[in-house]
Length: 575
Ligand SMILES: Cc1cc2nc3c(=O)[nH]c(=O)nc-3n(C[C@H](O)[C@H](O)[C@H](O)COP(=O)(O)OP(=O)(O)OC[C@H]3O[C@@H](n4cnc5c(N)ncnc54)[C@H](O)[C@@H]3O)c2cc1C
Image 1 (cartoon, rainbow, N blue to C red):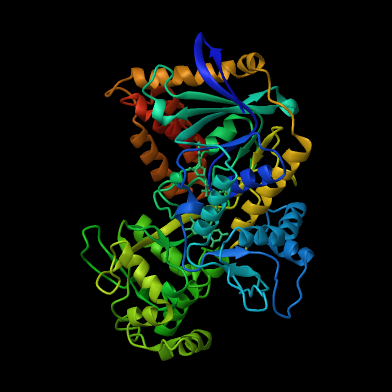
Image 2: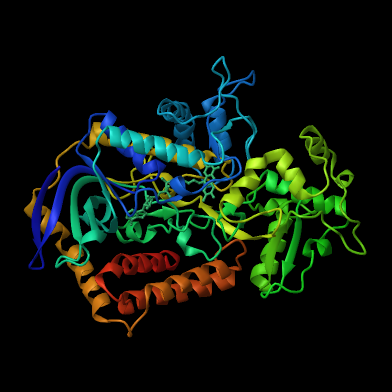
């Protein structure tokens, strides 16, 4: 990497010239960096808003899953079968599905080799289990924090290989040259937060042949979200660069706690807690599910099944299916403005019509499961402790004692199954720009649980291989780069100056802008959408984005990254 300075609009800015810049330090971004380095392409760097931020490093669930080809047992499997299953849910290309299936074994063993503790037996069998939308037993898990363990193993490898990481750097533009089909990425403009107070406002340019965008999902667009607070997304960057997206409407939603963001899947539901709602002030408590099920057996079985049918699925609503529970929670919270809690302290009480819960009310599958787990005890908390004591300890570690207080939940956004389009080498329509990980829309509508982590690993590995073999050239000479990047750089500079010039009073604050994006997306673009409302909302979203560009204000230079982020977030729903 060469460092120097370039002049744009009469000002001088630092520039780093290199082969590939990776934006984002989640499991996908770090894997891209490690793979590039392993293939001999060492002229690379990672830039990240915060090392340790993002869904990989900061989220998890009851049993966080990695999906790969079956590697144990006597059930035959093949890459073609796995590809068929990946694509079966729709909105997924067969060739991408095949590449993900074929690459899954190598990607999995790469992680195992770096020390991710996936469980195996003494013969070396990585025994699998069945996850949602999985006809085989392809899923495996290193526990509730599988993706964090992946992040840590990859981060250690990045450090071991001494790959430069620019921490505290927020990318605010993907720089491009050319037009139409000839458009290509030439680098990234970032804000170095530590230098925001200086005369250059922290602007740093990366002059690169390739840009790997591993910026994750758009978690910050929703009021109810189980993405970590640190993961807001940066889709606006790629839209601005002209990258094409598809299937953006295909997001995954499910029940999660809101005070501490965590999916209430698996044993949290299999323990059959009481679902209660209250008014905003905590009064008027009622067991709202009672009104919608014919008897306690149907209600308790739907709750139990929610454990392993966690994502909301419209096909599982009719006939008292498990997704009816999500819909009823949505109705209480969003439509009626009430609050919903899981109360583990006592069994569902029923009402005059529904009998109080007893385990014998459960369907045969659920009853047999609790029997086998030795969890046919009174109270949900006792059942949960018996089946999964760490699940109780986890909340305790975050200041919530499930034995003493109810747990507030909502239907939350968890994953975007759509995103930016890529080739079978994860290259977008903009040459040299590679979206990998969640930001890349390869996931399909009903992806098997765990396939997101696999898609991120396989996609970033394939992008790295392609770059190392086919795009190993040198970046532009600095003067040529400054000419190509000048207009975009100047536009961002003027936007930054305008945000600062509005001072503390005039204009739109980043907080107000983000609150409006979240409110609108949760009302019209989340788990329940009405086409007419969504259409009208799109026009309003565009107005908000244009207003954000015109009126965004930040009180000081340290707020610039936040201001740019708010404009980016406003742009995404406006597309
Ligand atoms: C609660 C929860 C449970 C999940 N469970 C599973 C599961 O069991 N199995 C499964 O397969 N998947 C699961 N997922 C999905 C999976 O965790 C994500 O798809 C995956 O971790 C995304 O990895 P990534 O590297 O693409 O992005 P992330 O890990 O989100 O990383 C994005 C990175 O980009 C950085 N960044 C973003 N914008 C910028 C910018 N402008 N400038 C600089 N840096 C930027 C962020 O700081 C971060 O470092 C779950 C997700 C959640 C939220």
